[in-house]
Image (tube, rainbow, N blue to C red; front, side, top):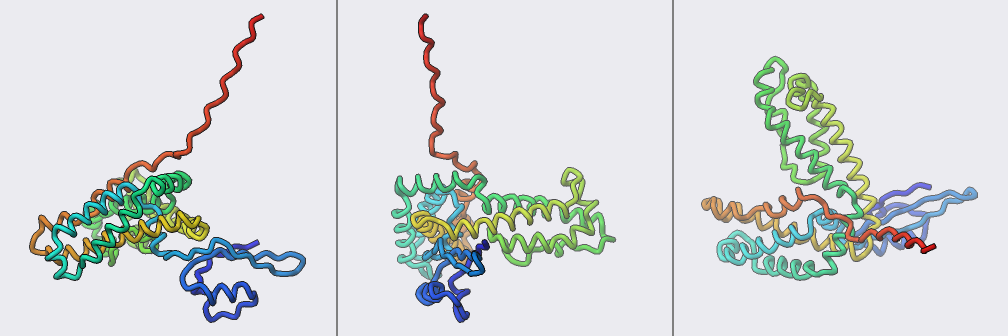
Length: 300
């Protein structure tokens, strides 16, 4: 038996021998599903499952974000947007976008959603891709902290500081981080011995390989997880992703609007959310049953 994660768009324009698949491809506009192919008695059988009708990009974006920290960050940003509405409007942040943020916050901030998010987070033991991204970015930061002096002291290696430049903002995009880790191996290999003392005598190339392997494995696992999410969980993650995207859009616009006012510009950040990302994942909210109490001895 073989299982694929299939975006609906991948079925467009293909010759599909299964009537059910053809119907799904024609009807669905945006989603992901699991396609399982099994061969029995010489015949191929296809089974569909895990259809996701939500915006997969937003679901993935919101999946691993800490619930309470995201809400707190959203409230903080919405107040900033209201307080600075006049100038932000000149740079294309509208009152409608602020209203959408408030609507996202109102929809998310329920006991039901909080419990749903806690249960889902507890089931993902290390928060998978989010943990791998955090670990990879921590390694990258440590490398960058010492790269300049390593390059300076080993000029004959033919490596420059620019060789360690990512070229684009990495953010928390797994594919970008994975590609960057791969590209770093070339300059790192030339300076492995020089970097080693800064990493407890471990070769930097080995650390980069390990980080990329963990990240790629976690990303693959997340794809499968996304395809099989329950409807209510997918809707929750999509809403979280929508709020996070609004926060990021607001911050980007604020950098232009307050380019001459650094103190105000600095208020538009993700500090609350970043602290939440670094916090310990919640414990499983489902209580563990207490062991049975032994029967008292019967008097003789």
